Length: 83
Image (tube, rainbow, N blue to C red; front, side, top):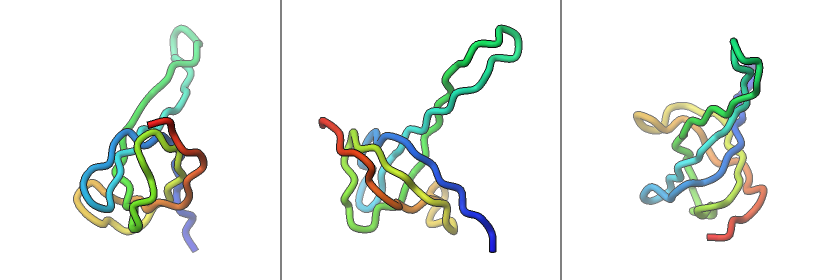
């Protein structure tokens, strides 16, 4: 059994039907200055029932490729956003 990657991030926008754009932030140590810096990446997440809205914090799990850039499915909505 292979372990599926899980990502946690904030929904930036609803990108059409059943799709959400999620911004994932990770903190890495700078190689020279030894300070923690933020790195960001956007993922497309499949939201089958359209429950996620902009500003929500969600967890997504890796799945088979659903389109060219979409390889994650919505697992849970952790917190609802203001927007």
